[in-house]
Image (cartoon, rainbow, N blue to C red):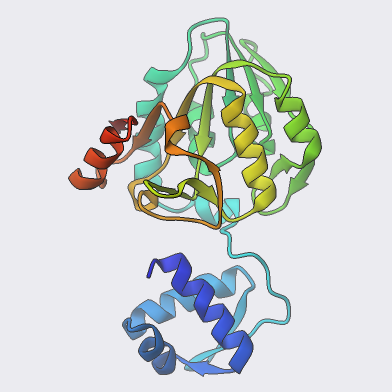
Length: 255
């Protein structure tokens, strides 16, 4: 069972049965007590349950199990920096159009964009737009839509419609999961619709994902592997996973 699946099951168990102890949860999911404590801490930060001495109790309000941007931005910093730097060589040439998906790794790429490279950039990410707004060489377009608090990105019919009118040279996309069987996936259906539109609006699709997401599957698929030209990941990817992705037609670049 993947960590996200285990945590979702923990939330459901605690919600349905009330207070559960660390020992009970460890036995139920066949993991160590330390793993359970880490899971409970993560779930409490997301407001999905409340930790008490020795265990957890239900939260009054449940939300989708999806890390907020602030939390994700602090996770695996070295890997994300390496991925963003490696992705620089995949940027389109001067005067080209670039689509930037929301996410902590794509935000790092935005910060690393060469100051002397003129680009037209479309993004639905408020933090990325804020970062690029002062760049004289960037013709910036902030896509419309409802801004989700979790990802600080615009989503919804307006966003998808706007992307339907765009044909960019390269789309740089993030993902919560990437697998042979389920392709690219994310927990939220509106995020998935926007990512699907991003993928469909570009001639070339580059995915930025740390190695821990390879093999993971989130709830909603937004693109098959066949839609991906290049995956940029870190050195933690296994040789087997890399070989399977290459066989599926995905170029794998390790940062």
